[in-house]
Image (cartoon, rainbow, N blue to C red; front, side, top):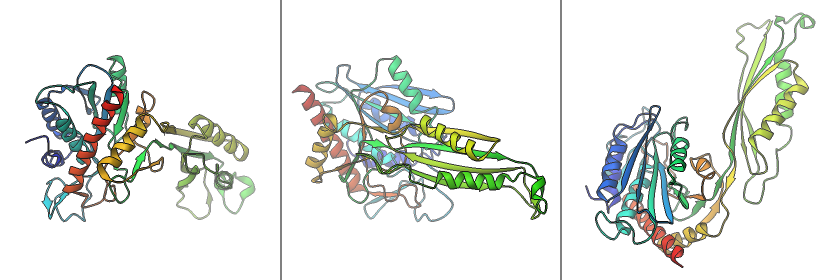
Length: 381
């Protein structure tokens, strides 16, 4: 299997059913392709998660591609081609991970193969590295976070990192993501006193207290947005009393919510606000907070400008800078080096019949190759 065409490698990766947290041989396939190009590959297993760091060249600057080989489950219905067959039909590659994001990883490798001067030889200047995790679609605790700590300990932190998430809505070249909103999940339990619904004076109804809490939380927008981010949002995602009787006031009432917040907030400040609102309406409560990522943004200009110019030169499309969407592993990388995201069109990611036209996959490899060339050319100036 050659490495200059991303399609065979994408097919081989798709044929590994690497549903989180299983690797199913996907990183073996990738490691073999990288080693044949001359990369030094470090296999990094943390917990049950297989990760990979690879580098070619030892000088600076170091350009890093980042991505994940794990995928979400295919689901039971809706596929017209097997989710792990890697079939090409009428010029379209089908399979789980085709656009999120085994296709982009194959394009990484093809770009490196095109950029490197010869078999087994490093770049003429600088270094290229890859940070590949098997834990992006899962809990994200034993993947990129742990690999970054390992990279820092081994002095492998890059000068710039490009994450290959599918950023484009309809056409390759449309969007470069330079940031993401933060995400906070909260589980609220309000405690009361159980009693008969005909004698509410003898009970303390936690449902009423919870309703007042939720009403206060959703009464007004969190903000009106910031320069690069849309307004923060709070969504109640669940309410549960667990009451099977119609004449009993329950002892507890629970709710869960998710806040997607911009760079005008921090997770800690939002957690303090939630606790204060709860304290105004409930005497006894439990609040469990999980912050899966803080809002971050990479400054436009510099490497981001070089990236955008390379994309436009290779694709003919001038990308716009964006910070929308859900979380990605870029939220972890941002704490170590400048990071941006650019990949395939994401219209079918996580869908049945996830797919990518092979021409688009090859075009992405060409764009990544131009990005490498322009990055190192800019560093030499």
